[in-house]
Length: 154
Image (cartoon, rainbow, N blue to C red):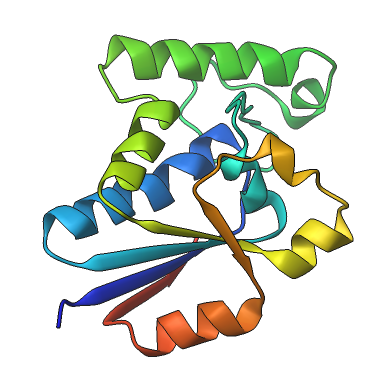
């Protein structure tokens, strides 16, 4: 029986989208079976169009070249500007795109589970999601995590 890893992904921003896909694809490369349970804002990572933003607001550790006061971070357009800087940095450094990482996970048979309760709560049209998603409640996460060697909340 393979070792197992289960992640719960709760964030839907560009910077928080990378960890579940990087960790899951790495786990599979190391011989683990991997499952990601997507809930609340993490459901954004299942959308066909991954047009995610990053926000410096409330993220004091974000390495931007020019310190931006909090009051400026809240102004219209700043989030889009910072997102464009981050996307450029990702491209310049040769980091795989989110689409590439997600496809790598799917090719490696990482199991993607969307929280049905959250889908219902936010009245999400599941036609906006990729086809490889299964839908289940929190018990699916607990069951998978309970049998995992590694279980992480992201």
